[in-house]
Image 1: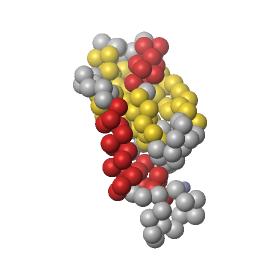
Image 2: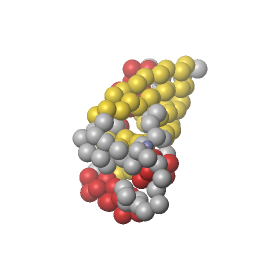
Image 3: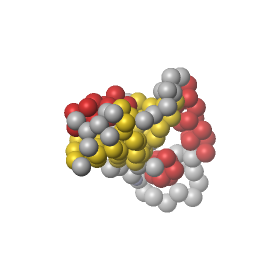
Image 4: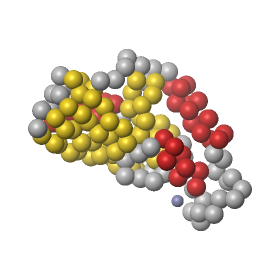
Length: 136
Ligand code: ZN
């Protein structure tokens, strides 16, 4: 069994944004040479996340962010964290900071309409994403 680590940089342009990073993850898997196993996609940030959702209609990402913003307004009365980005911290915990995807014959096991997304909740920023491929 091999374990190959890789990191990518992601630049966001707005405060809340979902970026499709499926291609970058596929590239990291291809470079690893690993055919069967699992890939972990992890973001080391407390105001961002990683999720899997629809890759075809960009309106789905729009609507996910709209829903999160309605549920978690930036200036909710009662927030105490002095940075003023508590909504982003809560969104990060709700979405989660990592996903794992199975690998089969070098391919990510994703549904036709699924993609991996980096979720920015306190941008614009330059972020990093770690991709670890484990298998043979
Ligand atoms: Zn903060």
